[in-house]
Length: 165
View 1 (tube, rainbow, N blue to C red):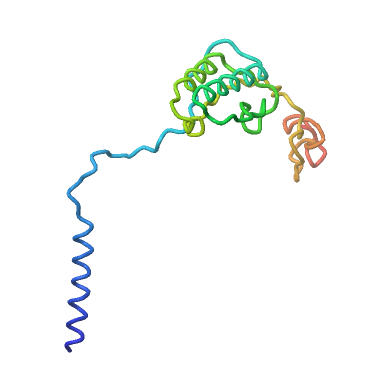
View 2: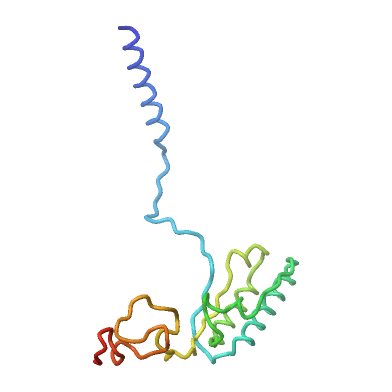
């Protein structure tokens, strides 16, 4: 009987200790604590610049800003450095975004900021969107056209029964 009573008092004491430790006198006044800023993508605008020129200009601006702070040199692979992920070589870039990235890199005061806040140029696609049917891969089911062979779309091609729409 004494053992059961000791066990109860021990559990009750542990519970009080946990509750007491979890109470603090400080209160968070913010509804949401935002994450630290990461990559920066400036506002769009201005004339359009060819990909090779935009990339070489941004690489030079970053290299100059890094050198001014005494940071390690870094090699950038153009045009992959500025090209949107999975993009083709049919993008142009906006002058205003290059100007904003230049100002951003020149405002850095530590070398770490280059990795913490990379600048993304605004890309404008000039890719040919008319492509051939099925050019992007092979279809496993024929739904109205000869997909994967450059055939017509489902709206005008032959369906699997051989009739036309």
